[in-house]
Image (cartoon, rainbow, N blue to C red; front, side, top):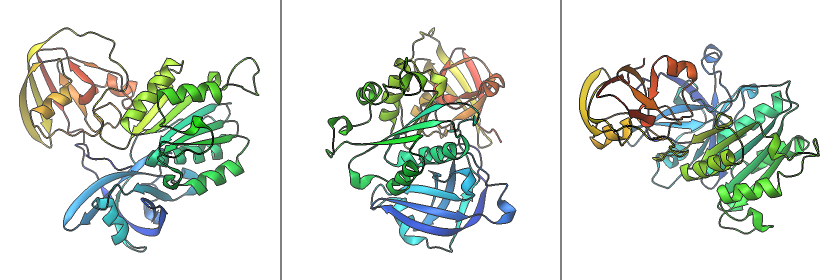
Length: 374
């Protein structure tokens, strides 16, 4: 998963040796990193996390985030990376780095994670689109290894069969754990088999999946498989996440049990805003970023805080603009905002005064925020 922007916190990098490079499809590859003994504790990770790679291409420095396909018990870090075009930095990265080279890598980051419940009977659903399979694969390997009572269903969308990344690994998992794992492939540009599997993963497709695949439950004749779903994992493009998250919510899954991760910028709210806010005009905003103090005046609060600061060309950090990535996390030091539903902050962090600028509606005439968290 390649993200576009980093947040305001300074990232510490470690030099790791490239142990293996493998081409998975014509536009997807993996990098396996060797972790020396003295850095083992720094690189302990949870399934669903990512690392930031820092690399130089033609004199230009890139810092991009890539999700891990490896699970914690495998005791290695393997990254799944997509080449979007011949001109992308990832294309040059693939052709220029060789086994034995050193790469600058951050410690594991991200909150697209799940608590482990090995003693419970759980049903977990995964929706992945394209390279969005990377953190889902990490999750599924981890759950299959640790939770022997959990059953998993994966719905994986691509343009065609040729684009399916990690299919050999997924098929091997399904063969090994066939009693607990079922995988279904969907293609938007290629007809293979039943019409159910032809088309994009979206709200319409989710309804068909619920009614035609997740309908009969062998473990409970009085309910459906969908009725037993405990957690939903979604990773892909923003439109896909929005459509599927709302489909799951509208079919009875609580929002706190729907988890999603983006791999590109997305500027819309995932869920509809149902609350009406009082109008506040001529808002004074003071904020600190990279040890520099800034001031701005907002015409009103009809647009969320981050988006208004970006319109005024301030260099505030962001990636998704949808409350998922946490890049715009900051501390509210003065004033009042309404923090809309988001996938990132915990209840404890919210009580400590942390907000996401992208999900904040200003409710006072003056506010003060600090993006320099560390």
